[in-house]
Image (tube, rainbow, N blue to C red):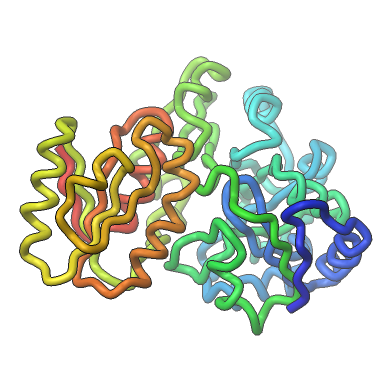
Length: 335
């Protein structure tokens, strides 16, 4: 694997070299503002098949495409509605994926045989420049072995892909640290299939209405697949009353020999256990989002018989954070 350091100033000639290789079917790990991606030529069936193999991903789980401009979107999609254009104008480039009708240029392997394709225009400088240089949409799911946590820095994922990936670009820590919001417009209304840092309130302000979808399988079949798991059991606990949440975690944790607690910075000192990992201040959900996956990965690497995770209030960015935590944890106590 050839590694390009882009943490400060990136070597554009080397980036062009990588882009040429990607266009010709090679795989690359690269940073986006959400999480790291693993990408290749999204219009090359054999290149996309390499991504499925590298990630150990089920072929029935479709892959989104990253684009650099509207012309690239219109090159691979059809029948875009005025509202879909409006949403793209509002949230592209950024942590937003929209489900559109694909045209014949997109191989069926990308969409798992569906006539729909997820489209995202990243705002991260390296990712956006990389797509521009490749010149075609990148098939680019998150850079993780399927079922494991997405990577928010290169060091967390590089060993997982050292044999099967040709290039890697180090862009430091991901700015957001959580995958994009996914939306599909149905009957003139945006439906949020996966919450992210673009919140329901932001989408409603643009579209006038929004649905935070609960029956996701009806509009995105792959959403019934289990996306994350830790290497050991985890319990999520949330209560509107902070003290009750702390007390419940302490009470349950006493039943284990070596528990780990993942919590906000303000509560870290209240837990009488050896392993307490503070994610961020409860007053900064942006920092919480950014640090969450790396904190979960660290907890999973430590020796313990149970991981206890504090929840956050389900509003704004908290909706996306709790979506990920409920996916990760085996047991949830939510008051």
